[in-house]
Image (cartoon, rainbow, N blue to C red; front, side, top):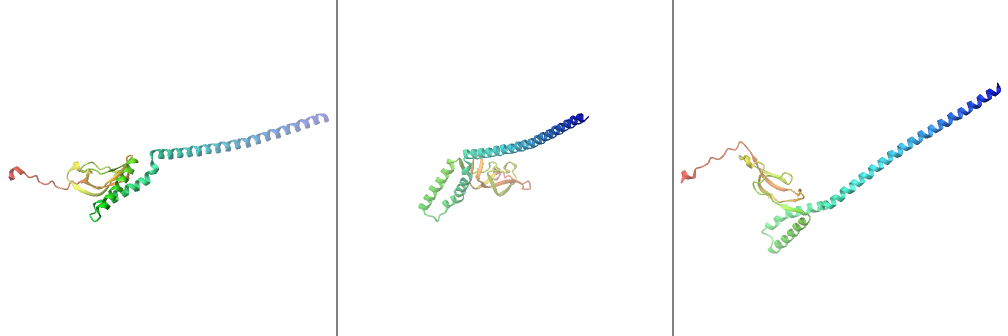
Length: 191
């Protein structure tokens, strides 16, 4: 019986070693699984960062290709050109100074044109373009057709690629139904 007991103890010992070994393998597998999940998460985060960086770089290159890096400078030039062009109408400056100013403004306009910017003035009666104009004054009218049309261009605007670099200042007509129509006179009867 001792031999059976010894065989049983040896088998029990081998079984305990086997269970211990399996538990160790399971623990190692669990640890490897956690490490793999962590590496995969880090890899996904890294890929997202690289994609975002590439997207930002691509957007920057697109802006450069469209010349948008010059927009702040062009806005400043547009402001100078539009705001100070009124100096040409000043009667107190000499003809020589006026000629020099005219050449300077022409040069600024050429620079703006080289980068696709255009100076514009709305014509009286044309519809107002909200993105490109700023209303300075409204003029009431009883004519529905004139509603939201240009009554006067006070200061030119500058536009580039459909976007304003410098908004035009305008007066617009606004329909007012309370204004009465002036009575028409028959000039034929008055003569």
